[in-house]
Image 1 (cartoon, rainbow, N blue to C red):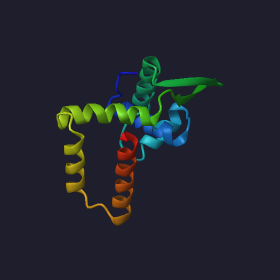
Image 2 (tube, helix red, strand yellow; image 1 turned 90 degrees about the vertical axis):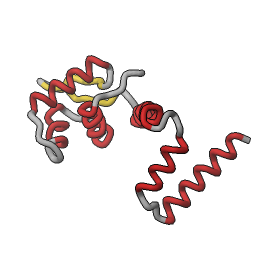
Image 3 (cartoon, rainbow, N blue to C red; image 1 turned 180 degrees about the vertical axis):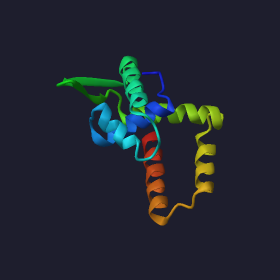
Image 4 (cartoon, helix red, strand yellow; image 1 turned 60 degrees about the vertical axis):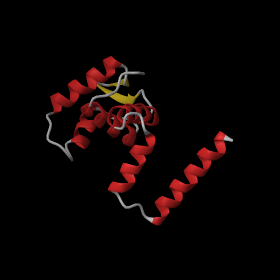
Length: 125
């Protein structure tokens, strides 16, 4: 899927990735914990996402149970790639340097970053 979700759609996907599935009401209740939005707005976003292929659904009585039709890692990779291209002129190095400069990683995070870099280096050999 080459179409990227909007910010509102990404919020819905995040809820469904966390819950696994949910009705429009359940998704709305989760979103309402952090932002003010009407139920009908949430329902319309969900219906549009279904039409775009971001969600699947199963009927359950008079409602539907919604599921993400896209994997979290796929969307993250796609959105990050676009972000790196737009903001950092395609430079992963500049992205990483900026991220490390903005936040002070702890020892465990640095160890994990080193392990990931070692793994990437070993894959190239």
